[in-house]
Image 1 (cartoon, rainbow, N blue to C red):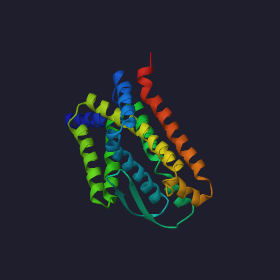
Image 2: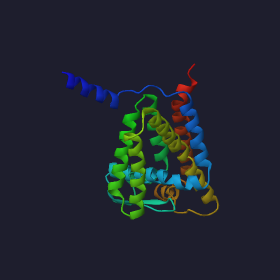
Image 3: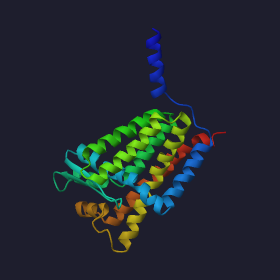
Image 4: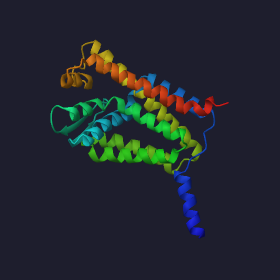
Length: 242
C-alpha cells in the first residue's frame, strides 16, 4: 500500500498542476524574450528553434493530410525545407504550405494554455516528444546537431533544474515562440517588398489557390498577432490578478 501511494504521489507530482509562479516570472521572461527577438546576433542563433518548429509544422500537416513525408533539412543560415510527396495541388498541399509560419505561434499558444493550467511537467514532456519526432525526420548533419542541442538543453532543465528554474525556462521559451512567430512574418514581408523571396510559402499558396500572396501574408500576420495576444494574456494572468 505504501509503495502504491508513493507511486501515485510521483505521478501526481509529474502530471498534476503546479502552483502559479511568482509574479515577476511572466513579466521578466516576457521582457527578455522580446529583447531576444528584437536583437541581432542573439536572434540569429535562437531563430534555429523557430525554424525547427516551422518545419515541424509543415511535416505534421503533410502527414495528417495524407502526404508521404520524405524528410526535413535545417541549415546554418536558419532556413529549412520539408519535402513531402503527393498531389502537387489540392487541399492537402495548401494546408502543408500554410502550416509553417503559424506553427511557432500556435505552439506558443498551446504552451501558454498548459502554463495557465499549471502543467509545467506535461509541457516539458510534450516538447521532448515534438523534438524526438523532428529528429527522426531530419536528413542533414546540421539539422541533427540543432535538434540534439535543443533537446539536450531541454533535458538538462527537465532532469536537473528545480521547479523554479523550470518555470523561468518554460515561460521564456513560451514567450519566445509567441514573439518569434511574428518576426519571421514581418521579415518575409520586407523581403517581398524588395522583390526577394518570390518562392516563399505565401507565394506558393498564391500559385496553389489563386489568392494573392499579399492576402496570405495578411492572414499569417493576423494569426501570429492573435496567438501573441491570447497567449500573452494567459501568461500574464497570474501577474494581473489582484
